[in-house]
Length: 637
Image 1 (cartoon, rainbow, N blue to C red):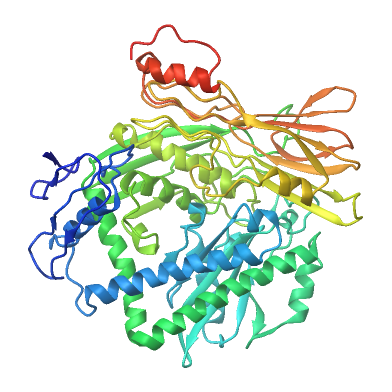
Image 2: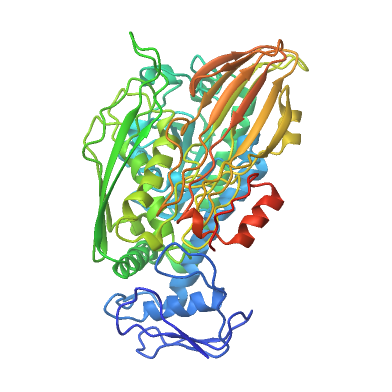
């Protein structure tokens, strides 16, 4: 027998009594909803692996036991007064499954590879006021900002929405993130009553502007592309053709954009039907009440888990490579600094960005809701590594994020924002780990690649004479963890996008991928090694392309934790047909002539712990796999 207590648990919380280190089945005796009797585990199961937060990772049965135990601790979980526990769970899971179903519909019907393959979108269900009740398994970057986008629609159309209406907008200053992220919002009705709202935020590969892919280095939001405040696209089920025509006239690939737009509309409609089915079964009042209870449930779990972590305060600062604008009289892009202070006390936490540099000229300024999304992402990883807390607006109530207006983390109109949506989110997500390492180092990880590694290409496809736009995010290393290496070449931090297979890329666009591989020696050294980055080369085939790049951590490599070394920085250059290699700026547009080759290396991740303490067997494995190329003779592990 083994007795295991949740690390950091308050006195009085029951222990898990485990009879086996690894089993596959378990039977849990469930108590009545208001019972003080704790559940019993007849056949125990626990498969321990790496963890960031105060709750170790376990198999499903042990997680269920922990969840039921906390739900019955009356000081934290008051009983549900009007909804029985079974109905609550059924409806809660139905809401999340509806959000997942939205994702499936979108993936099966979208046209562009970045949506149908890479998955650069998020789907959510919102209550009558615009609070997020359920988000699909999508992008953490959208956790904090999607509710503001839905509320902007509600504020404008709350007295004028009818069944069959569909609204669209992408304005960062109305709750959007950046212009390529287009929000399609639909009210869900049942018997004439609004149950809530559904929303798909999807990245369009092009939204206009002077640069294909809409990733140019511009100095105000007017230069970033088509900016849409909340507008009605469908009325009572019928599209407003004038609005649709206006949108499609301002993008480079209108047929593809129309396919993506209709996929978003279809995904919303599917969720609306699911909500109507739930309302028909449980009643409108019951469904809308349970929506509130789902968010309350997430808040209580977040407060409980926060309370089990150490109190403390930490600070961290980091600098960004530049905004893509070389100012008059300067010879290179100027860096700027973000400063963060984290204070955790009891069941709440505050993140303050006082002292952060003012807004920059280029598109590296984030709306506060985008900055908050990066913070929320890391905090959920730290506090809830086993994903017990449903992702919704309730989970963020115990967390306060503040920043002075007019800084790079709290943009004000008309500052440009397109890079900041992901680059600031990445940066503050990693900085949150750095700040909290001051008082809970065993609960955080080292810095990951910290950039989305974006390349866009555009021009006329010589194979068919049609205009094309390609948008890709190239993955790097995941930060080393307190007891495990980082992961190589994976979406990390605020991102959850997938790799676009080379076959699809070459079929869709006039390019050839010459190599795409793990970069040796790019993961930071440490007791646990940071994940390796990737390197890739594209050749532009039979035409001249207009390209753009957005890349960070070229000057500020991803940091290590507790003596771990930094990961390798990013690099980008253009190799011309005559063999000349020309370094490129890390942000903004550039010409890629016929036959030229784009050479990109995305960052590796930081290491964790003293490199001298690395296990020698792990080092030998790294040599064998090609993750490192130089033998380290000084290991003591």
